[in-house]
Length: 326
Length: 287
Image (cartoon, rainbow over all chains, first blue to last red; front, side):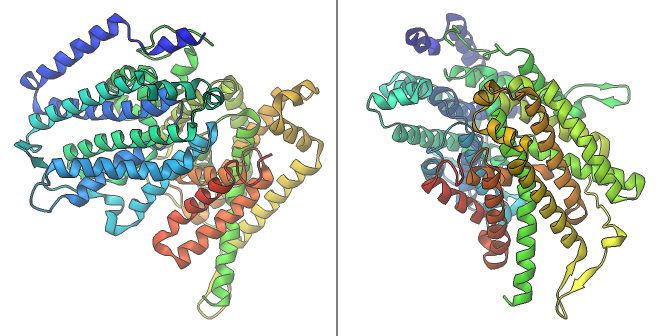
């Protein structure tokens, strides 16, 4: 039984082909797309990095975190604080710093939350994320409820993020690197252990692994990668506000991972694009008579998550190779 | 802080704690008995507050609005359990998160379609629209005292129901071990409906009671939901006694934190939770 489940992460040929085609499409898109769409796709790629970082916890280690946006938003704030008012910050200093601080925050919070399991873990991650949210929301010095502006986007080493195409390709590079890193991690002894923790934590402990350390490392790593995504988000949009760390951001990431299929990284990547396309689709719905369908997008989104999943209990995501086992 | 001020803060913290208890009691029982993560619990609170707003506007009487609103929310909770939640008891937590998060979207959008996105006020009933003069400068509004009395009465009634009646015994048995309770002949399906409807009604009732004090606004459920989570985590899942202790503790820490350490007030409650997690990862009163 363990053998087929162990192969759950291998991607079928069709998905591999799709990913290859997708990469080619992403590489060539800036040469044909308008600025508006370039920015939109950049945002999707950033969210894909965010979703993949969550998949490390949710799909690979089996820890459902409802507070992952805290590390995403925190890194954005780090960039906002480090940016001078009238000059670009250098990205090769601020990006590593933002990732590092997010990782430290995740390490600190992880130290408490990783002790808990199941429902507790969900509630506690959410509560701590809310704590970070209110720390920024309530303090005027930290931007308060309005957030902070990044007047000049970061630059350095010949790359200026004010240029939309440069930022696009930089994000694409980060996306590819994160994907490659997580896929490699998935097959490493470390990744196998995380998988073991998801499938049966007690058995993994009995085999001599200290699951606390493994889970804490995964939590920290996921926080660092979420920080990378958050940094890029702040660099792209030019401002940060507490909503970036909010509950909705965390929940959206969970939905992206579920939509795409958990535990194989590729699913989270595809799910992020799919989710954003869905969201745009719902928001752009036409008016029917007096009734503006698009304005009530939350209703369709909500019905979709509450009802859609309800009616298809065997739905495992877009990328769900070989369903087997219980 | 002088004595009068201290006294006022103490009353406020107990009132806030009891309100949190009413919300968290339903949540902790739904967790404990059905094993459902209910993110929509805060939305029930919000719907309650809006119901109080709409019904008071229509009838001009808050007491009548609260009575009708409670009945409506019992029916609503009972239907919701039958139609939706029942099918999710044995699904993974992730599915439950998805369902209840979707419900938040649906309820918020329905609220926006019915009542718009503005902040509304609910008038304090004329009968309770006065205050007690404590010193020359300090006074305490009568509605707050009324709320304190209502919350205490409800908490007492709940405590009596849970710990002294046969029904309460069944509920505790269900929270302790659902399968065992069922095999001993307790109709667990009906118990589920009942507990869920009760949880929804308590959440909506808390929203209705607080509406004249806090005004009624969109997304008012989100903050309260997180506080309830903190209470449930500190108290231990499925324990009503734990929820009461934790709710009062959170009420005290939050209210006095805001007075004594205003910069860190919003963090203190979470620090408390972190400490509990360090020493008692399963909560203070895990059964």
